[in-house]
Image (cartoon, rainbow, N blue to C red):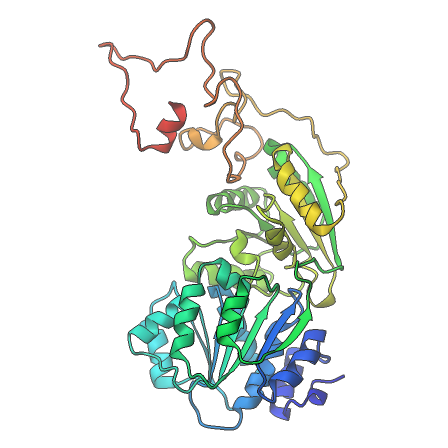
Length: 457
């Protein structure tokens, strides 16, 4: 079946062909004929299945006739997804007389105001918070919106946007078409759906519990925590023609792993919520263009970025929940392509690993690399103590990294396991460890609000 057979006009199908798509995906075949006549729709489909085109193409087709005004609003949870949807919509609309724009936080608001008030847009992609900011400044009117899309609606609810969504719904005309697209449709969305949609049609092309695409080959790599960076390096080295996203749990962990991989000679970028908008855009742009082969990211990248030909997803840190695992590895194997998903697992990750396998309904294969020294001990410092013994490496002063092979492991978002006492301090034989006194017999003061001080107390 072709896109023209779905009822899309020539100006839109030309844009689709220019992007390189020739045949619609299942969600596009099912959704477009429902959206074109103006029906409300609730659609659940696997991540990477082509949901964006499924709603953008019929929206552009409907807007070809009528006045030039803000008539279609797409709400998304993240800046990255807003930029991605904007880019796709602009490509599909290249042969149509329609204007597309996006607004989101993290960047100055005046240029966005000028775009809306002076240049004008037919389709606006927005994050909820920035849209409400603009409305509060009387910079955007929603009175003529005819079509509303809630994209990644479950993610917006998870991120706490439900009250913002309720406020936005009250600002919109009651007579409108509403489309809700999401990778999963949990029960929490029912309240939003009841208020937002009127007699919706429903498409369930994804199970109520998400599953990875079958084309993704999954494997778990058991390893000691102090050898994770070494093992990651080996995995990357043994996959020469690869484009990989490496996920960590924390922003600080992403920065540290980024530096480790750069030192090892990998062309690496980093993406997380503490990076500026320009840094985030540059990292994604470099990754898409091949200037960066490895993108280290937090879960901000597990949804809302669409990069073709990601060959590998590597979980440096095991995700906290099975849903996070599924969304992470869904960055590869998209649009029926194949992909590999590797996860580095440690003995401390046993609960998370069990939860993932229970959700998937099967055991994931464990793999050990040939010629990799799994028995290597932590390097010892000048006093014979092993690095990380008793407390996290972050407890040391900066720059005091006495090791021989890599920077200390990335923060895994959980308290460190310790030996020799509940706080990792080993008492001297026959007594308890006490802070050293100065020449006058005074003991050093501790700052009770300092995390490191508390950890030593």
